[in-house]
Length: 226
Ligand code: DX5
Ligand code: ZN
Image 1 (cartoon, rainbow, N blue to C red):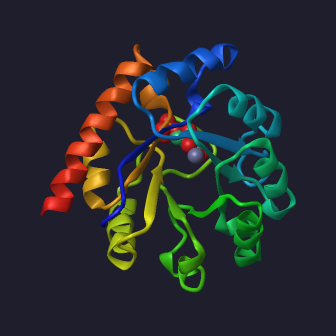
Image 2: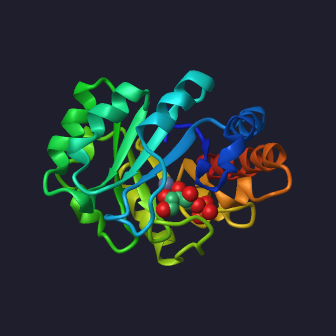
Image 3: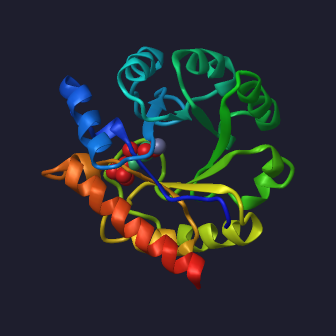
């Protein structure tokens, strides 16, 4: 796992949108490494969230790299627009297109980092012929669509199996992660941690981010020493 570092990626889905800038400053001050932006189309998932203009505004406002998670059908139609809007990493749901390999290439041609997202029930085998092309794999630990759901325990073993297979890969995990289970998720092998409600629904998002960074680092160091 040489070269990999722990990264905390607060998900703005649970932020107060009427004071989004202020919320972002809080997690910046808390030491967040990425800003996770959930894009939902009401088709791939039942919910609708934010799109290109919000990514554009965030890009002008924050120095944090934007980690854009596309939960939309036909991601190939939109990766260009999100890249131009300022996304730094674009991940798309592997279930949402028959041509994942092509979408990865499209993202890379835009000069951005590319990742695929696997739903909790999607087997790791879908990565067989694309793993070497990827900068990151995001494993969903809830069914995508909403913040504030419970972590699905079966995903813990999935993280460990992917880490065994890909020791140098950024493995991101998203859904149901908070201060109580972040160390277990990192212990299983994840190094990029998304947290929405645990951070933004807490009384002090800055302090919660800081604590999450601390706990995640501690678990990661324990892992790499072991
Ligand atoms: C869910 C989104 C998540 C969401 C996580 O579909 O992909 O990024 O914001 O929220 P929590 O951390 O509350 O489970
Ligand atoms: Zn997400």
